[in-house]
Length: 106
Image 1 (tube, rainbow, N blue to C red):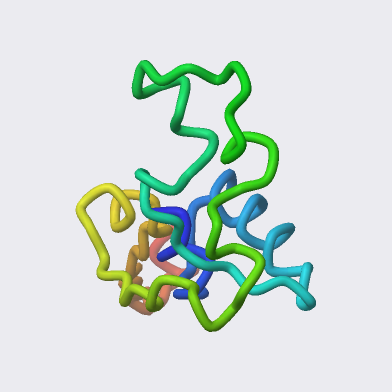
Image 2 (cartoon, helix red, strand yellow):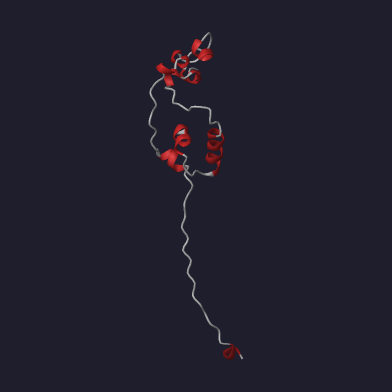
């Protein structure tokens, strides 16, 4: 979802828009998807041992060689990512000209 927001450049609600803008300001960074099996941050949440974990300290083996990186994924909008889009509302205003006759008031 976050990768979709970063790459999509949509018009999002304030909190998401602020975070995405800060991330997009880092123009020298390439944002990529890391599969959960290769994501060091997911080791503990999957019940794995973080003690003496090479992947935790060095990252996945392929990280050092760009030719071995997993292929880019094509992100698709999801109901969760679409929920953060800024709500667009249209306003229709109509006016009727009314001429008061001051003689009727007197």
